Length: 60
Image (cartoon, rainbow, N blue to C red; front, side, top):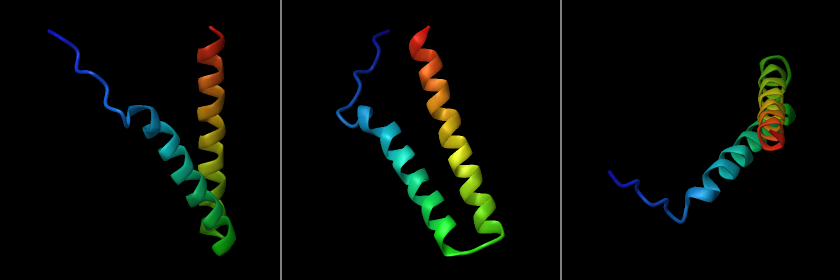
């Protein structure tokens, strides 16, 4: 079986998801308190985890 060739959009999928998550975190931090703060902290913690995971995978 042949592997399907990656599309032109393939390199832009992960950065687009990261950008969308960043916007969600920023907007939720600016909109209100309480639940919005929890959402923003959760989103930014997940983004930091993604960066650390990518950094660790690269150095191996």
